[in-house]
Length: 160
Length: 102
Image 1 (cartoon, rainbow over the protein chains, first blue to last red):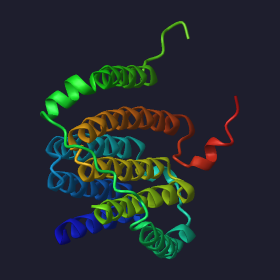
Image 2: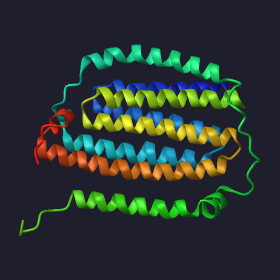
Image 3: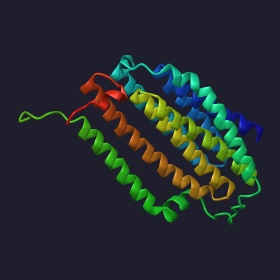
Image 4: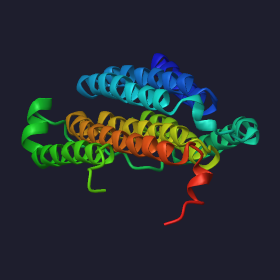
């Protein structure tokens, strides 16, 4: 459990760094590192498939997409972030941490144990038999994403 | 069991808070999507942690995989829109978008 808390803290620290870094490239790399921590946490929670997905897709593919966007938009788009936001972040973070701690402590023992019988079978059976319609939705979402990117980058015709 | 679940939920809430703070205070469009990514990390942590504690890890994994696929699709579309916005306005400042006409 101690290692899990260390990993969760690492996830929070890298996420905070992604929010606070002014340099977008560094922020994107911190986000990838946070995804790596989350992937390891998933592996340790007996969820290897989603851990592999998190590391390959979120830490890999999404970071590449972010870096390509940063490269195409250059010089951070000429945006000056407000300095107050960076200075106020630790204050709000500590306030939220205290609220989080108080709420969690007050809920301890009050939330009913949500135990359910363990599932039989494998991940493949759960995905293909129990959540079949999710796969149809996933295919639809992937096609929608591809078509929207194609639509956004289409070239203008001669008649326009 | 209950305390483990609440620990994960506390960390997930912290991630969602940081993402919302980023969305509320930052001006750069790419930074705003980094905020959305951090929120989605908190949500996927909450999903898998609930499945882990309830011993329904297989269903939780299936749902989280679906969530990650949707996340990738949304990010790809959003970043394409951001590049188009930059080509039109020459800036990534969210405040300039409110001044656009038509």
